[in-house]
Amino acid sequence: MPELPEVETIKIGLNKLLPTLKISSVSFDWAKSFPNSANDVNQFLINSSVMSVKRRAKVLLIELSSNYSLVIHLKMTGQLVFRSKDYNFGAGHPGKSLLGQLPDKSTRVSFNFTNGSKLFFNDQRKFGWVRLIPTVEVKNLDFFKKVGPEPLSDTFMWTNLKERLQRRKRSSIKAALLDQSVIAGIGNIYADESLWGAKIHPSRMVTDLKDSEIKSLYQELTYVLRLSIKKGGSTDKNYLNAEGKKGSYLSFARVFRREGLTCPRCGTTILKIRVAQRGTHICPYCQKL
Image 1 (cartoon, one colour):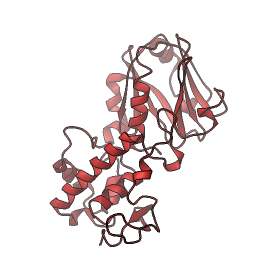
Image 2 (cartoon, one colour):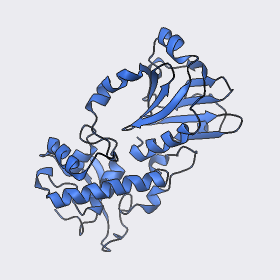
Image 3 (cartoon, one colour):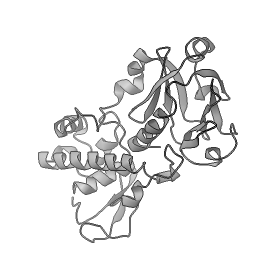
């Protein structure tokens, strides 16, 4: 599943192309991918224009002139592919859809715009979805009521991270970081990278962390997230960014997917262990229990 930087990269790319476009029609082949009533679609989607593309946690929000929003979750295999006479690119997990003829057998939802351009939501495994919801009600979805704050928000400081971690004070720090109700958008890659940067073993209990360690973790977490956005996301699971190109972050990763190689800080061999039921990459010297 794409993490925060990958979804942010999609948002940035689509926000350059979709605003002002007017939707003329929509079609879908899988009801669970597009669980919306025909009445709402006809009244609030058709003939509405895209106002902006936003992101909350790992979810995309396309706000419409009708005061409704398309809430899009890519899940495991979702893609968004935009086609027009001037642009042809995709965002999400790769496959023939990004370059081939569309719609294809993985296309779940197709949006047609009045200028002839199209936006396709492809999802091979059918876990993702596109929901049409009043914009004022988006915040009341169960997912948004439970999800934690944005780690790159201007108002999110290290003291806020400390406070949020107390929700999982008897858990390992890695489990706490992966919990979307604690903090939004953090997955396996950026948990491992930030914990390595802060010299914290991922199995350590939250309650045992010192303030200085939490402050360091906050600094590393924001650093790796911003770097990944700058680099266009990671290439984990062959993820492609909003221009249909592989993100380059993993070429700059310090510990993730580097088991058997040397730690760039101390030279010790990086190990892959299991923490919080996830494959976890550590330096056994820098990140001691």
